[in-house]
Amino acid sequence: MNKVLLTGRLTRDPEMRSLSSGKAVTQFSIATNEYIGQGKEKAEFHNIVTWDRLAQTCGEFLGKGQQVAIEGRIQTRSWDDDRGVRHWKTEIVANHVEMLSGRRKKDYAAESAANALEAQASAYGEDDAAIAAAGEPLAAEEAEDADGAEEADDTETVAA
Image 1 (cartoon, helix red, strand yellow):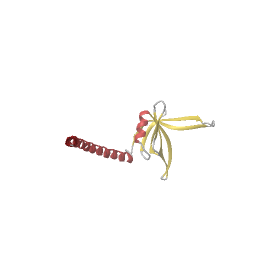
Image 2 (spheres, rainbow, N blue to C red; image 1 turned 90 degrees about the vertical axis):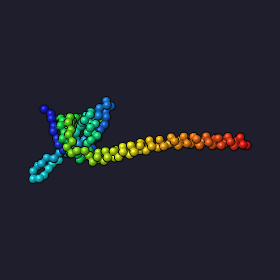
Image 3 (cartoon, one colour; image 1 turned 90 degrees about the horizontal axis):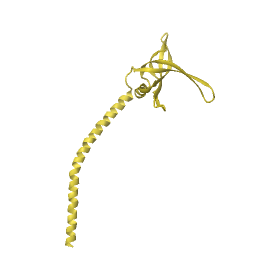
Image 4 (cartoon, rainbow, N blue to C red; image 1 turned 180 degrees about the vertical axis):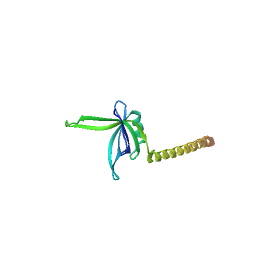
């Protein structure tokens, strides 16, 4: 059976991209700690890959420093580069990611900024309606003033 369970913190923000086939893929890494005795820890770093909807969710909601629980499988890929050198990469293909530390601070900041913009837009919307309603009588008065000016011009022409 190939099953991996990890709990750790993201070491960097996730990198999300779309393939030519339209599939979304997100890559990030997490650090886990192993306690080796006498109060000492050893850090291990794991590359994580997510696909499709999970990739979109991770790209949108995860950030550096967040604590997550990962469930997936281990996979090793190999490829040859331009010089013919073989490379190997071992990564965890996650099928379940759980946020353990809540949302990022910048998500709260973005949400509050969005709420402020929405409130501001709705206030402008009310002001625009009031301005539009107030503008209609002004337009009618301006039309009457213009007609009055034309009548005055006609009067002057007749008088001349």
